[in-house]
Length: 102
Image (cartoon, rainbow, N blue to C red; front, side, top):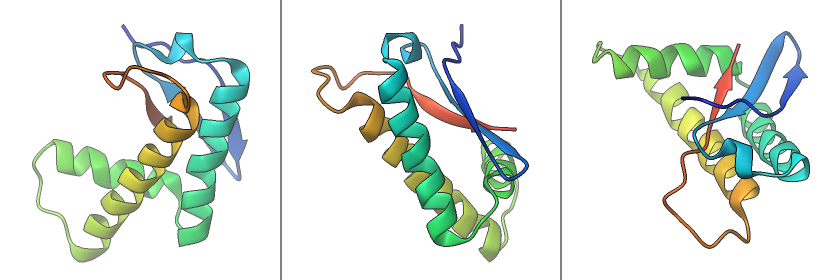
């Protein structure tokens, strides 16, 4: 069961924080996580939707080209940044929180 808490729209894209434990995060923690992910996408000059498409292709075990592989690395960095921003101060590390884009 996925739980979406808050979303933020960046040019033509909506970033959400999802996962079983997303409901445990405060609105401020969610906002911090979204900002952290957006910062990674903007710093790398990529469209989060392109990253999400590359990740989907990877999850289907399809062959990636070099650019798609780099997009997957950026997605992982954005997701890690969001996770850290949301869970800063939390004691548990077994937390299901991730980003999604549409």
